[in-house]
Figure 1 (cartoon, rainbow over the protein chains, first blue to last red):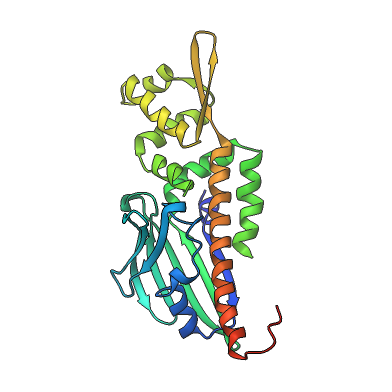
Figure 2: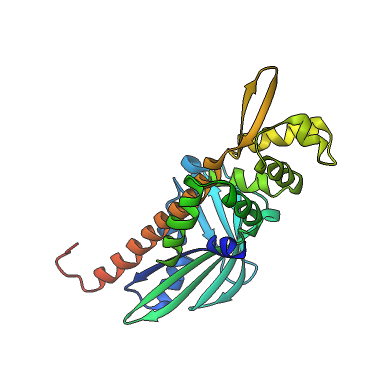
Length: 152
Length: 110
């Protein structure tokens, strides 16, 4: 079962030309300049911006055109320009928070940015149980497609 | 964020227990309630939340209603989150790299 649960760690990597200091600041304090607000937000069409408050305890907050605030998560580790960890619960309460860790490693003149999304143990036990029960799409998605993505 | 409903639904231990019962196969409400320390109306309520979250489906069989797992629901959840970060990080990558290209103010090759 542990195997299945650990397969549910989502890991994504991108290489960017900017050095770590710049890549880190762009990801955090300048998140609003690139984050796809209209599709990746709680308010969607009504979403206006996202504010990433730097430092431990800082919140990642979406603001909507109606003046509403939706907290996506809170920074728990702040080590610029190498690493940050935040809780992650957009669209739901902090009691179901998952965790997102982002690492910035020098790579040539640029930076290798690795994002790890964990906290699936909430789903993991159930997912593992269902994995046994479902030979079709679920097994494919978790066992092959997702593992491939996680290992990419 | 569509996957939020499924995560929120599964955050409740009773709902996870209900889902666990359905692992064994399709069940009517009464049978699920009989195996859990929860009233039948409460189980119905949990089933409704799970159904709304796309994790459970139901169908009529004679005079009763059978509930079963909706395997597509969790698969969709996974795909959704996977695609979510792909798209967000692609936007980040474009932002970071467009700056780098801007530095050499060359003749804007893609």
